[in-house]
Amino acid sequence: MKRIFRRRGGFFCIFPLTNHSRASIVYLSNRYTKYRKHRGGGLIDILISNSSGKPIYEQICQQIKTQIMDGSLSPGEALPSMRALAKELHLSVITVQRAYEDLTRDGFIETVTGKGSFVAPQNQEFIREERLREAEELLRRAAGLGRANSIPLERLAGILTLFYEEGDSL
Image 1 (cartoon, helix red, strand yellow):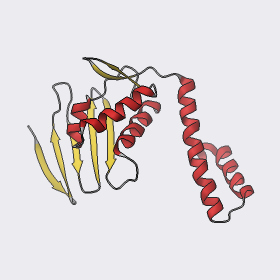
Image 2 (cartoon, rainbow, N blue to C red; image 1 turned 30 degrees about the horizontal axis):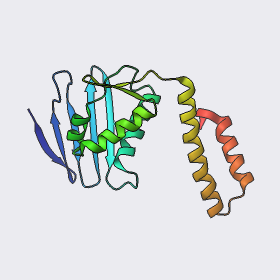
Image 3 (cartoon, rainbow, N blue to C red; image 1 turned 135 degrees about the horizontal axis):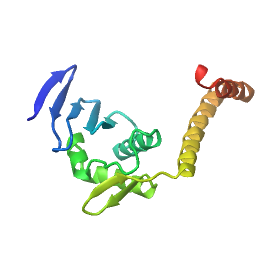
């Protein structure tokens, strides 16, 4: 049974996806679409921003990668089928297929014909390399901001050192 109700400029849809899932909540607005699926205590949460400069398939990839690397999705856990995810997010199956192909190529998921896509066992070295790549991108952005605002390199390095040494206490 499907229920639709309106909240703050958008619509919520609540309905069961399959016999194995408790519920799916989809929020539709002119700015973003949110997908959340509960499965036996597990949760896949995908937020698609229509106003983001990133392509939708990259948004899906990045969010699934993040959930795999932070342990929200564990190895062997089933992902929604391409068609189900496309339907829930009101996207083309080709968009979701591209995201799943990129995730497979990068070693984050494995697709078994006729069975679906599953989170791949993670190589810790691979995860470390992915995290390093993310840190390099953030540092590249920080360096660009520093150059654009005439902040000396020594000052930026000092701030980074402070953050690194303080750890979680900030």
